Each structure stands twice: as structure tokens, then as C-alpha cells.
Length: 485
Image 1: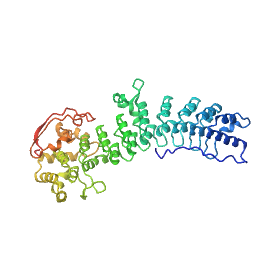
Image 2: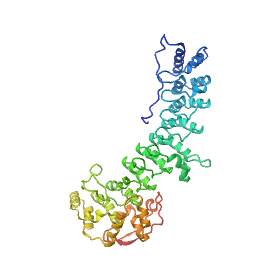
Image 3: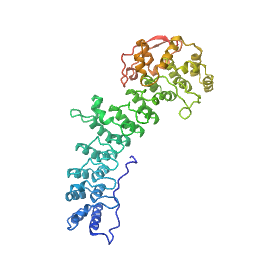
Image 4: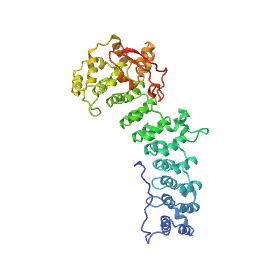
């Protein structure tokens, strides 16, 4: 459970009233004793005493808690029944020093019978405490399913936000209460004509989920981003199932993709990319391609390129990467070589995912060659030597120059589309051609300087059924020599 929502133990019993205690305080103390002992008959007798009987609902001087609050906190529903029959509505909604009401305590502790009595007799379930939390939020955060369902059925407000601008959906995504999150999401995306379970969510439109699922807190983070920050993988998966927006950037410039990398939740990184994450929204996201290459996450690298990631350089120091620091910013191709990721290096060369660094420094850098020689790993070393020894054609040099001139920002695609270049060349600059879509499983079959004929692949990644919908179907690639540009 989240530390920010500690259990609200309302009161501790005293050893008894002091002899000098005023009579109305003595009555309140006796009422407390009766509630602690769940002595309903004694409680009824005390409530029927004359004189200052109404003082029975006065707040404790330290905690601000009433006898009714204590009964709800302990789940003494018979005592709650007696107390709510004798008190006024104002006493039902009384608050302690933290702004907590009896209704909030019953919801937080999961005492459904007490909660029902309070609401049926007029308690306001939409009041919030000093943290901005309502009864519904507390029930959801602490995993009290019955209380949550009852509050939803009684039309408690799902859109209320706490002092940090977070809704119940956001708070539950952080706490990891997956069943409560499913209940909230069901009601978030459900319309009167929809089925009442999440089985129908795939048929719902994205617009139905927008208001509650994709709203952001005061820091610009959505429920999906908060679940990733808290490492709540199941909650993040459920939010992605319900069309959570993967292209929100918070106030510190982080996206869901960046957060999933930070928390080493790479399966979720892949899902976020499959859902159409735009890697051009934040410069930090494009730098993730270097990390994917270093970790051998070729599927993620492929998705990033298909999601419009541009060739760019990054300073790859030891704090993130295992290989020796090169001293200057390096390209994804250089990272692939240093990480002994020959398949990815071959793929990057094949689709011309190159920078000026690759066609100048990388081809003449003795340090990289020495490092690979020390690795005693022949495949990347042979590939690098071939890449260095073969002259690049004028077309390849022009392609890299054109790609570099288009920049790496979010307007890169617009610049390319508005240029006067041929359409086929534009697709190649955006890395959307058939060779760019080549399945990871086929990268190892690419033979440099030999005819490479690639068969049609029917896996989900190639067909786009996991979120990458291509404009045309993939057909068998023609035979060509990779370096014959």
C-alpha cells in the first residue's frame, strides 16, 4: 500500500475519565468504551440519558474524532446502526483533524455494512479530506472491492482529484490494486449500451476512454505513466488494453516509453511502441535507440525506427553502457558494433540508418577496431572491416546528407513530406520501406555483398496486427546486394 495513505487509526483508548472531567466529556468517554467493547445495550442506555446527551457526538480534543468515527473505524456495524439513528446529518459528515469523515473510514477499512448505513442515512460520500481524497478513492487505493462497487453504484464522483490533481484511477494505478483498477476502468469506458465487463473494451472507441483514463495530474503525468513510475506492470498492461494514450509528455519531458526504459520494463516498452508511441515528441525518447541496441533488444529497436526515430548521436558513458567510453557522441550503428550486435548492425546498414558520423568517423576510427579486436568476436569485427573497406556510393552519401538535413525533431516527417523529393525516396528517409519492415528473425539471413532474397513473413510484427498498421501489405523483397546502393 502507498505510504502516502497510512492507515487512519482514529483513536486510542484512555484508561478512563479523570475525576475532574466535565460530565459531558465523561458521557463521551463512556460512549467510546461501549463502542470499543461493542456493547450495544450499554450504548443505547447512554444515548437515552437526559441532560447533555447530544454532547455524545462532540469531537475528541486531540484527534477530532467522534464516537461514530471510532465505530466505523472498528467496523462495529451494530454500534453504527444505533449511533446513526440518534444523530443529526451534520454529525454524519463530521471531520477529524485530517478532514476524515466516518464514511471515509468505513470505505478505507472495508467495512461495507457501516458504509451502507451511513450513505442510506444521508452521509455525503463525495466529501474529501485534507489530501483531497474521497471515500471512493480510499476504497480503491486500499483494495476494498465491495465498498468501491457500492460507492460507484451510488454515483460517487469518479472524476474527483486530490491535491496533486490525481483521480481514483491514477491512485489505484500507483498502488497496484488491479481488481479495483479494472472496476474503475469498466465504468470509465462503459456507456449505457455497452457490456458491463472489460471483455467488451476492445470494441470501444478510443474517445470513450479519453476523459478519465488519459487525464493528467499537476505534474503532467497520466495513470499509465504513474503505474510505470511505481513499477506496477499489471496496471500498466490493463491501461494499455483500455487505449491509454502513450504520447503524453509530462512536465519534465518524460513519456511512457522513457519511464518504461527507466524502470527496466522492456516488455512494456515494446507494447508502448506497438501502440504507436511517437518517439519524436521528446529528444530523450530518440536516445533510447542506443540503449535498445546495447541491450540486444532488436525488436524494440525495429519498432522505434518504424515509429519515426531518426538517426542521431548520443554520448554513451559507462553509467548506462557496458562498453568502453568512446569519448564523443556516437551513432546507433556504433553502439551495435560495440555491443557485438551484428544482426542489428547489418539491419541498420541495409536500410541506410546512418549519420554523418558513420560515413566519416566510424569508417576511419582505429579505436573501435581495436576494441572489437580485443573482444575476440569475429562477426562484428568482420562486418566493421567490410563496412570500412568498401567505398560508399554517391547515392548513399547523398541519402545520408539528406537525412541529416531533415533534423531529428517532431517536424522531421513534415519536412520530408513537403520536400520535392520522389515519394519512394521520402519513404526511405522515413524508414518506412519494405527493407525497414524486415522481420527481426530474418536479419541474420542477410548476406553482405551477396544476393539476399527475403521471403514474406506472416508474424504479427510484420503484419502490423499489434499496432503498426502499414499502408500496403509486405510482399517478398527482391534480390539485391545490400551495399550495392
